[in-house]
Length: 216
Ligand code: B12
Image 1 (tube, helix red, strand yellow):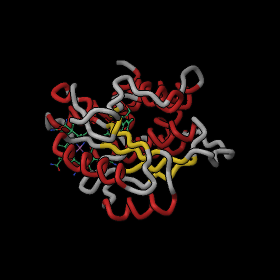
Image 2 (image 1 turned 30 degrees about the horizontal axis):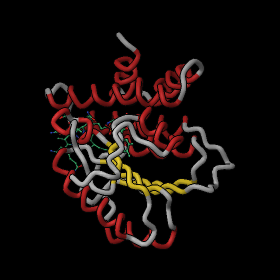
Image 3 (image 1 turned 60 degrees about the horizontal axis):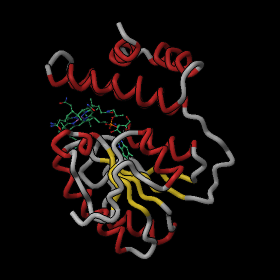
Image 4 (image 1 turned 90 degrees about the vertical axis):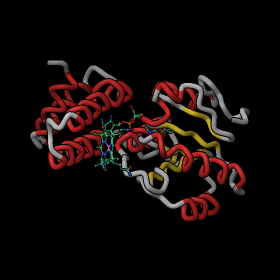
C-alpha cells in the first residue's frame, strides 16, 4: 500500500489522530509542497475514484474530506511575520464547492510571505470585487474543480482585470488540469496547473505558459 492510499484509508475511517500523526511523520522528511502534491491530493483523488465507482458512500466521502481538512489546518505552518507587503485573495467562484485545493494554495502564499485572505468557495463576484476594492490585493487566486466552472472563472478574471485594484489573476484547480483544456487561455489571467508552478509564479512572477498577454 502506498503512502497516499494508507492516508486515504485513515480519512475514510474517520481516524483523525492517526491521519495527523502520519502527516506529521511525513513532514519530518518532506516539504509542505510535497505533502500537498504527493500525499494529500492523491489521497483525495482516490476518494473521488472510490466515490465514482460507488465503493464508498457520500457520507464516507464527506467524512474523508472533513478529516483531510482537519489535517491540513492542523499542520499548516503559520509564520506570524506574514503581514505583507504582498497580499493575496483566495477563493472559489459562485457555485464552486470544492475548497481543499484552495486551502493549499493559501498555505503556499503564506509560506512565501504573503498576507492572505482565504475566503473559501462559492463567493459571489460582487462581494469579491467589493472586498478587492477595499483591500487592494496584488493577487487573486481562483479555483474550479469542474469543467463547467470555466465560464464563471473567465467572467471573474475579466471583472478583476477591469477593477480598480487590477490584481494579477491566477486560475487553477482540477478543471484546468483536464487534458481537454491543455491549451486553455483566459484573457487577463494566468493558468497555473500545479503547486510547483504556483511557487515559480510567486517567486518570479512568471507562469510556465504565461497567458496574461493572450487573448483567447
Ligand atoms: C471532496 C469532493 C467533493 C466535496 C467538496 C467539499 C470540499 N470541502 O471541498 C463535495 C461533496 C461538496 C463535492 C461536490 C461535488 N462534486 Co466533488 N469531489 C470531491 C473529491 C473527492 C475531492 C476534492 C478534493 O479535495 N481534491 C483534492 C484537491 C487538493 O485537489 P484539487 O482541488 O484538484 O487541487 C489541487 C490542484 O488542482 C491545485 N489547485 C486547486 N485550486 C487551485 C487554484 C490555483 C490558483 C492554483 C495555482 C492551483 C490550484 O492545488 C491542489 C494541489 O494539488 C473530488 C475528487 C478529485 N479528483 O478531486 C470530487 C470531484 C471533483 N467531484 C466531482 C463531482 C461530480 C461533484 C458534484 C457535481 C457531485 C454532485 N452530483 O453533486 C458536486 C459539485 C459541487 C460544486 N457545485 O462544486 C467529480 C468531478 C467529475 C467531473 N465530471 O469533472 C470528482 C472528480 C469526483 C469523481 N471522480 O467523480 N465534491
